[in-house]
Length: 300
Image (cartoon, rainbow, N blue to C red):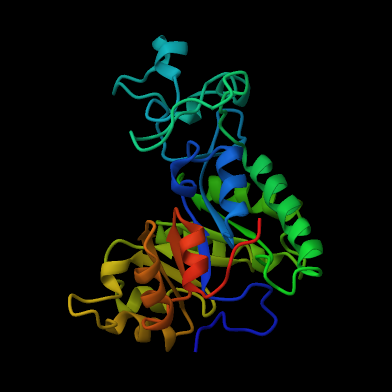
């Protein structure tokens, strides 16, 4: 049984985690992208988090700026010797003057409404957007016989490793009431750094998710708290013959949840991971496909 298969949990597993944006209709990590993913039924919004020079948490794809903004044009002299522009070298006010664009050719570069350009979102803007949708769904669900997607949460991913960024994130989440019983399970802190996960385990009771590219060892799984989780590539869960690998059971016996990434518009594959491999959640840029895989429809 999943450690998150708890009647008290406000969401129905398996969970749909939206990463990037819904079918690339907006650049990732903009408020428009988050609103789109929520409308299509995501349970969690996964975002990369870094701190600006004035220590504000913002939502981005990676540590460098030129891949997703026009910083090269706006601040040509601010690159470091390695030729990159870094979020940590800029204040929030400067970052808010930049236009956010897609991090690859599959994402749009300009808003359909040029007078409303895309901007980098702060973590607080994400929280405000998600909490507004959470309460909208709570009200709407009373009148749609359960067809409306349920409560929605956030999954901040720490791109800055170390205790300073982790502590800043924890403080902001606490200030937004994610320690209250009705909200604490609507936030999962995500990191690829096991040391950061172990540090956070001493600082918060919120659920933690360790992202690992390699098949975790038993020792690494033992270092996680029961009730926390791992996020792994789908190839570590399903072998070439379509069978479930031992990793899922190795995690289950320790009370560790298992999430798989990454899925596109692949309803059949997501359904297989939900119902055959019994994962606790998937990362996808098509939450509507994942919702259909759960046998649910989307009411926007």
